[in-house]
Image (cartoon, rainbow, N blue to C red; front, side, top):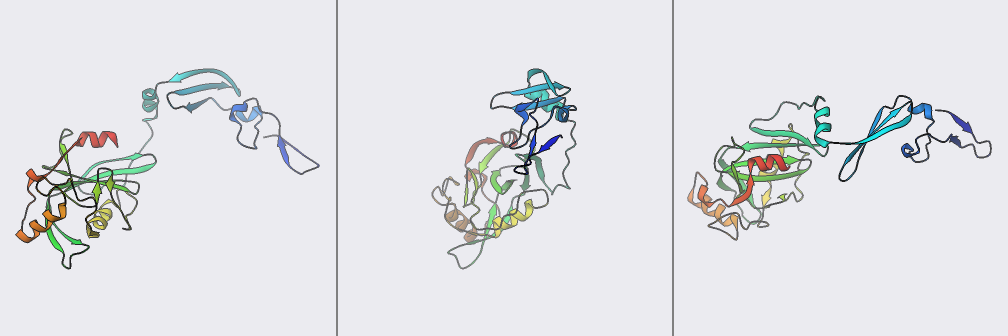
Length: 241
């Protein structure tokens, strides 16, 4: 870029640009700086505009179909690291990894804040989803192998429709290498009675009462009929992010 010195102040100035709409704060470009510029995309709230240039000068503009743009960019390589077991999907959303795993039905050893002893609680199959530092949890009645599979509210306290309440627990940033660490952090945390309602048909006001009953009975499985259905399917979860 060409510049001229200012003998009075010592500040370097730039000659006016042929493309003033490309000016960055306090920085002006000469026309020769744009000689290799061929096109530019401007993303607005409701449309995408492509501007073409030749020898640094604008030649034409036209609207771009977002689907066509996505197709053109689909040749860009995008790969993950090794994915953890039972991964349902992986991708990137708003610059961060988004990944979900399926947790088989099993007995969990859980601790409750006001209880002296841990409880042994059976839970159904769960879908644990992570994006950035945010996590969500859903229950299913069968292994998730089809997009129309209905999702149920996880019969777990400290989880809302908006996701897991992290509190002060040290959740890692979600990713292929860390998602099971987040699972461990969640289930190793001490549960309280926050967000414990609406998770069970039998114990509508407090799912922890159901946990205690299951623990006291030595139950091995969570009763599927007790799960509360959501309006979401596995396909909807995958699509809506």
